[in-house]
Each structure stands twice: as structure tokens, then as C-alpha cells.
Image (cartoon, rainbow, N blue to C red; front, side, top):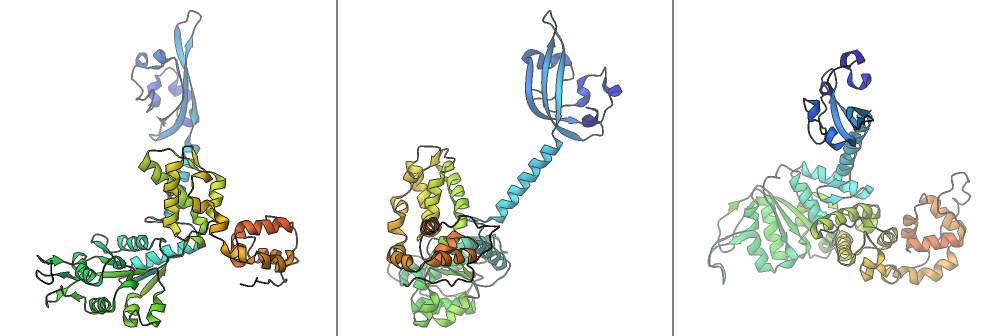
Length: 440
């Protein structure tokens, strides 16, 4: 107690316990009169976290327990307290909390979650794009989160306090899209009963995100090119030019360069949009992020549904890891929502997942069926071992190179009696063995 409090025994013997100024005794501050202390009515309390005031004026976190001392006549004659110094534990907690916060920041950028190398590269691109004024071209498959990338760039840029306007170009016909983007004046066409401001004007000072830009017609392409070049627009039905201060983000799941080569998309517009390109990787190329994504989706669904699902069973997680995710993160999110409808237990099980995800062999590895005979003929123990060493025993990467499932790789390893973990004390004799790829 001398070390914890800074007081010597001589300084405190005979004094009231209030000299230590505990900040929490039975949920309140220490009373000035010992007769008012709740310990006499309660008799005891255990493991109460609180703080005492050190002689030098700072507070020390402690763990306190107390018992009333009773004599033979069953009369309370005093109180015994035990005090445990919690300073080191408190410091460790803070370190853990700070580490958790940093980890969250590291694995998350806005609403984008991931720790994989490929998604960390996207984070770096977002940071670079947010600090610039360039037009951004975001490519990637459907469901990968292109809109989230656009939002992360906008809300981390100087335009964050101004509008982010999103337009899905594939959902609108040419005439409606023109009116939506540029606005129109009264009488410009049938049904135009009043003037209407367009999305470009609405976003003045901010950002316009044109999703599925590959679907716009040649006519809209020409008008969009003028907007980028002149930073001005004309509403449908009038010739008055209006200045706009906007930054343009464009996105598509299509191979835009092929559209340019085929003459479907204007090359000059393509290069003006693609000043700073960002490619969002599909989920099958960042499967190490699935755990983080699943945890996040479960937390969100618990809040929305008031359920208390604690996680997902290992077998169900293995199914998610083996699945190829053609719908990417959007499909994973929908799968967890589906599981929440069926799950009545503490953790999500395989039976709670959608049928198409559970039927992995027939759904996601058609190549495996066509190649199994070729693999049996040409994949030897030596070539598989060599490929494992080349991939540093990353069985998922081996599976990708063989165009089979990771389960298939495990089966071949079991068949050839190859250890599942990379040997550390055995010299690899197979690194020079040529790897023979099965025929397509």
C-alpha cells in the first residue's frame, strides 16, 4: 500500500480511509463518514474496479475487495480491504484498444474492408486519388464495391462537404439520361411541364459518379466529352451555357478498352475519363478478406434484426472460402443475410447458407470435372510438391494455378502423402522438377 498510494504507514495509521479518496465504492464516491459507508449494510464486496488518489495527486487504477470484521458478539468492529494495483493491466488494455483501433483503420477505408495485399493497394490508390483533382476511372466486376471506392475518394477529398451525385447510366434510356444529367427547360419535350435542374448542376462544387459508363450512347458520349473539356453544360431545349465545377468519376464492369477498339466507346472520352484508373479486385482474388467481411456483415445484421449470432462455424466458413463468388462482395453480403433468416443457433452453420454456395463441386469448379482425368495422368507427386514450394505451401494459390478447387489440392496431397504444412527441416528435392500444366 505504501508503494501504491505513496503514503508511509506512519502517515495513514489512525486516519480515515477517505485519505485515499477512492472514486468508486458501491457505485459512488467514498463518504466522509465511515458510518455512512455501505460496507456495513452489504457486509462485503468483491473485485470492484476503481481508482485511489496517490499522495502526489494522480489517480492509480486498482481492484478492491472488502469484508466487514465481526467479533464473537457478531458486532462489526472494522473492515479489511485488499487492494491490487491495476496500472500495468490498465496500460495493457489501452495498448490493446489502440492496437484494435489501428487495426480497424488499417483494414478499413470508409466502408471498404480488407487486409489482403490487393485491397491494400486499392486503399493506397484511394488516398492518392482523394488528394488530387483528376478524373477517376474505376473498373471491376459487378459487386466488387466500385461505388464504395467512389464514395471513399469523394469523402476524403477537398469536395467532401459538397454533393456526391450517383447516376446509373445502364438504367436509363438515352433521352431520359440526357435530361437526368443536363436538365431541361419547360416545353423541351412532351411532359416537360417545368424547368428541371440536371445532376451536373446539382453536383456543382462536388463529384458526379457515372456508374456503368460503358452503356452510354455515342450521342451522350459527345455531350459528356464537352462537359469534361469546357466545364459547362446546356440544358435540354435551350442554348444557354452554364458553368459547372464538378469532378467526374466513371465506372464499369465491362472491358472498356475492348469497347474502344471495337469503336463502341470514344477513344478521346476514354482517355479523358481514365486520368487515374483504379481496378477493384474480385473477391476470389482476395479470399483472405472473407473472414473480416463476414464478421462485419454479421455485426450489421445483428443490429438490424436484433439477433445475437456470435459468428460462423468453421465448416461453414470453409464452404465460403472454397466458393468462387461470381457475385463478389455483394453476393457474400446476401449470403449472410440469407443465413440470418434461417439461423436459430449461436453460430451460422452450412445448412443456413444458400443452396448454390453449398453445392460447391457442381457450381463453381466445372473446370475441375473436365480436367480430373488429365490431372490423374500428368500431375505427379514431384510436380505438385515443386508447385507447393513455389507457392510457399499456399494451397489456394496452387489450386488457382491448377484451375481446381483447394479441396482437390488437399486430396492430391493426401493421395501422395505430402504434408499439409511446409516442412522446415527437410531439403526440397523437387524445386527443379518441371511443372506440367494440364491441357485445357
